Figure 1 (tube, one colour):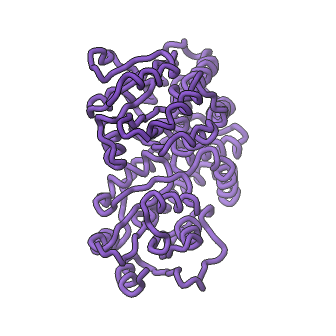
Figure 2: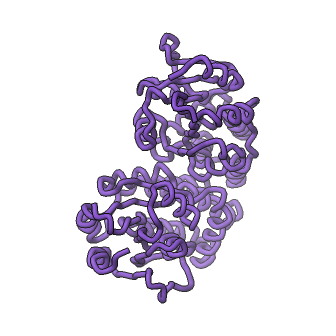
Length: 235
Length: 235
């Protein structure tokens, strides 16, 4: 292990494997189910409002999404949605939980390449059991010295993880698709961030501006560019 | 810190604060809601069967309970339950998540007494955000060197926690109300277990037999008896 190398944190959903695409497919079917009652924009807006209202209570993840989707469907149909349709929503959510994990292009190769020279930690938020199951299904656990499943990714969370593991912030580099959850809080702590945008971003993860003028902020299009970036940028 | 002392693990729900009583109140209202359709025994049995069928998928906690309760209500009414009644179930679940944390008798005093001489860890299973919230509301976080929220409490889980923290199993003592989750796996690892039964036990946590002849198994009626027990039994 190179003592002069970065300790690398990896986000999981939409950084190592596809996730938002699965939500998007479910959203499509949700819109179709409520299409008799409301237009797409109203369905999307109301569902998002319910999710945000319940976020503090439920946290992130599929189970909270299911509950908010049921609540929204009742609200938008003024109670006229049938029990069979609600059962269909529960079925949709269970399909999401059972969905296979599909890795993004290049992920396994890059992790294998980097694992010899770097301490690597997986840091993800969501439902505990669902995230554990996805890590297991991904076959990637072997590359990480630890898997941290957290309820929120903010400055406090990263600070705790780094301090618990004795990692100086200036040696920590976080790789992820969400500027809000993966990049900004780590930069604030004095770490570095590599943003790899995914083609879909959940509204709650969107930020207005990227810290383009911060010298510790990097953006690449594909994880395959990561080893080259790390070879030229040292802590 | 006494190097010759136990490292103590504490379960949280129904060991440090009331939990099953809250579920029981909700069960009462659930039975009343479905009482027009089925007798209490059928409601209880079907709900429990749904919970067990979904456990691997949802994990423990209130959100999974809410989803299983909705699914069961649809099943038991053959789709005749109304959307308003389902909204009522969602409301019941949200009340559970918002419920104040009520400590069991003697808990704070005992933790304060033991904290000076022992490393103490809180080990609980359930939904990440809900358990974090309860720890925060309890005001007890200060007594623990760590809070471990896990998706299952089995031999593998305890083994990981002990190895990660460099705790020899023979110095580890777990205190909890569930023989199945808190005591048996720890005894199997060579640790010690103090069982403090709660007046209600969720069916999924029940075990046939307690390891009464294991010299590292102890049973007390109230947590107030713990300091005295530890004063006489050393690792």
